[in-house]
Image (cartoon, rainbow, N blue to C red; front, side, top):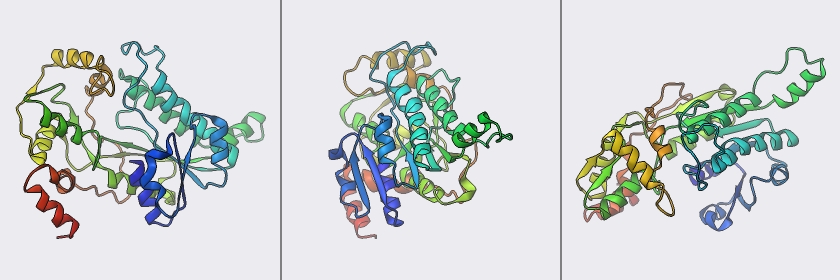
Length: 328
């Protein structure tokens, strides 16, 4: 998402500063003419305040899908390290650093399904962070003459826009491409939560929505859901990934109980998690749009663009790659 948005902003003539943990991971962005890639500890308030100097707007794309720290996922009061640090504390620090530098424009990426009351720790943390951002853009106290009103006016002077995308797809994503790799390696794919509903949105559409909102007064103070034009079950998305990648294998949908135990077992896998109990809880709620869409929102369909990066997976697909490169 970050690479797509930075590329879109550069194409529009914007000067962009990218804060990243490892500059080495942003090689593609370093080459862009109006981009300054800075290696920084984004969780350090002093670093944020220093790096935000001279900026007109701040966009927050930081998010983690799985926590490295373990804890009780069924206890809403349990301390959650990575989610809390990235989805709650970081937005709070960004708001403070913006206020310190007089930056009034803040665009924030939340997530569809974000809800402080959700059983999913991911969705809970996203919901709390979203509420903090929204509060920073509320109208000031009607009695600004009071000391409390003056402080509230200073704190609530930001023009914020919040985007809540469904699952984002695109070249190099960790969703459709993940299923394609699994189908290539496994003789049979056991699929948990096969009936879970998603409304995937293309990364390019999301990037354009963010870029369009920066100078659009109509988007100030608004929260938008970002979804593609069609709703799919997870089973349908896996079947689509199989067709596009040429790795058609049997898919075994798991019942609800087995889905839960499968998610629990996956938590013990070293390295990146394919699924956790927190994912299971999140997928109990349809990941589809029910709110407002941004002005002029016309997303592309998954079937229209997905073949352009899956094309190399099949023998005939190489010809499609050449055709795409030749714009034919």
